[in-house]
Length: 286
Image (cartoon, rainbow, N blue to C red; front, side):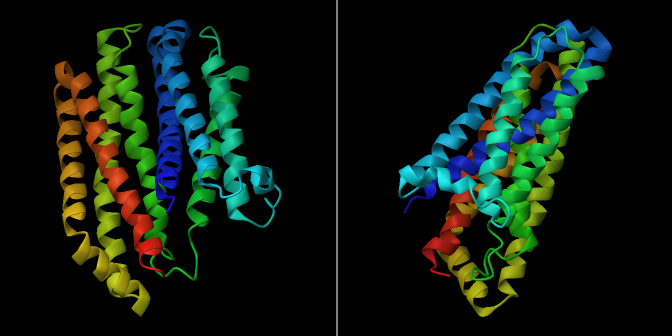
């Protein structure tokens, strides 16, 4: 099976989407406090890292193809296929990230022509997440045919994006310590809210499966009974990430290491969760 490439593509691209949104918000907010030069210099390397993550995601999606020579066909049916829309939006979103990384620090992102790029990045990121989640709303797969499974493709963008952006920004020293600490605290707070929503969505998804059609109920019971240890590990890692986020919010001096630890634990939790997400269908034969 080729789930590792799917896990890498979905998680890396969702992280890049969430990070791009977080970085634009931080850049615009920092411009108002310390000027566009400082804001651009601080966020520029993080935009480059987000673009690199998105490029790796596309490379991982290429590995999933059975006949790689036919990869170009993936973009030919965008009018009807969510999978084709996913590929097109991923390529366009990567272009927006590269443009963001190349944007000169002197350009004001909160006004004028510079304001178009954040808006385009937001729109293309939303299109990518929507296309990605809709590609899995399959009537032939009861375990996936749920709005809660769609939430599994949206909420990681909030958690991993905010924590990934914070992890990159904590290494920069182009702005004052006060601005840096405040920005990291805001991102950690947003990630903390995302962890809470993820926990609720996971619980509601499993509850919906158990109370759903026979095939979905059987798949949920197989996962709960056969993958209990992995489910417990996922929840423990999410809980630990939430604690680290709370530390970053409440203790500015420890914000940098705390967001790094939270990102590492949240990322590992998502790898486990996304692998189980595919196994419940591919392994269960639904």
